[in-house]
Length: 329
Image (cartoon, rainbow, N blue to C red; front, side, top):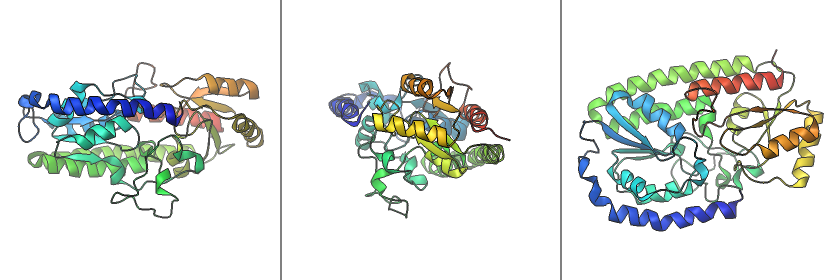
């Protein structure tokens, strides 16, 4: 899916967002002024799975988490229903990642919730090549604090896929614990403790990746779209994407030829596709070049096709796939 087609649902959703926020504000009577439900738990709304995982792991028993992106839905194309925009008004805490879901960004900007946290402001964004920015119009954060160009290229080309680097994800997790504590001071100590426990798990995951990918026959992998720039940079790999940031962008014939040449030169064995997008282009390229195919999951959602039940398990499955494809020794 190209940029023009992607912007249509985002723009069309604006009217529904405005209507939902206006007409359904009165439905928020079940939420107290501090954003807690009748059960006393903080009402948390997460934009999509990587944010949901953080909220659930760090919030624990003190939060009630809902996600705007249901399992199996490709998050980039999400269109919000009026009920979902009302949930944003009722939330005591919203966790999202600006630049991934244009319709969600608009809705959260219009929400009356006091505590709205953009995970992209909790770490340093980078760009990972000229193709990285062309599928997410308006994803740069040059006009926001913490998103100045810090030597990583044009901030308008910032890559939002920070959760696929365990180290960056850990940075975000620690700060989510702090911001949850500000939204719900009575349980700040528990949020800090839970965040610390999650950071330890992510540190262990990082060690698995670093050790597992230390010695390989090739450092290059081909994947459907440019979701793995941070992961590649962290572990000294080279990501070659069929498309840009959008998993459904169509590559040009010149790009296909370039990938075929790269595969031969760098001894690439595998073309990776993902669970929530079509595998047609990846399989066609693999067939034309005599390569294998496998799944490298960008973890934008968990479904019954995911190779694991949560972020940690799916990332471990990704590591297994990478080790096999790269010829880990």
